[in-house]
Amino acid sequence: MENTDEAAAITDNTAPDLRPLSEQLIAIAQALRDNDLTALVPAFRQSHLQHSNAAPSFQSGSAASSDDRRASYVQLAREAYAVRRMRSSIFDNEEIFGEPAWDILLDLYIADYENKPVSVSSACIGSASPPTTGLRWLGVLAEQGLISRDQDPDDQRRILVHLTEHATQRMDRYFASTEKRAGIA
Image (cartoon, rainbow, N blue to C red; front, top):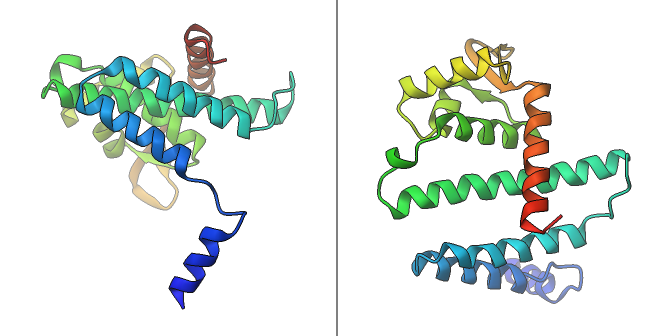
C-alpha cells in the first residue's frame, strides 16, 4: 500500500520538484570535493534566488516583508555557519579559525528564528570551542548586551540564552549588508 501512495505522490502535480535541489547539492558536493570554495557562491546565489522567487515580494514596511527578509537573513546565517564548519573540516583544525563569539551569535540568531530554546551548554557546543571558552564568550556577549540568560521555565536547573533585541537588529543589519555586497538583495 505504501508503494502505491509513494507512486501517487511522485506523479501528483502538487509534489515538489526536487531536481533543482538535487542539482544544487551535487554542485555543492563537487565544490567541497575539489576544495573550491568559490564554486559555492553560485550555488548559494541560485538557492537564494529560488527562495526569493518562492517568497512573496517585499513591500516596504509590511510585516510580511520583514518576515521574508528575516527568513533570507537566517538562510545566510545558516550558510555562514556551515561554511565556517566546512573550512575547519577542510583544514583539519578548528582552532586556527576560532571565532566562538560569532559562532554563538549565528547559532542564537538561527534558533531565535526557529523559536528553539538554547541552553548554555548547547550554546557552548555551537561555539565549536572548549566549554570553558564558550562560557567565557557567553559572559562577554552578556556584558556587551548582546545575549541574555534566563531560567528555563520547564527545568529550573537549566539556563537558556538568547539574543537581545539589540543583537537581533544588529544581526539583521549585518545580513542585509551581506546581501547587498554579494549582489543578491
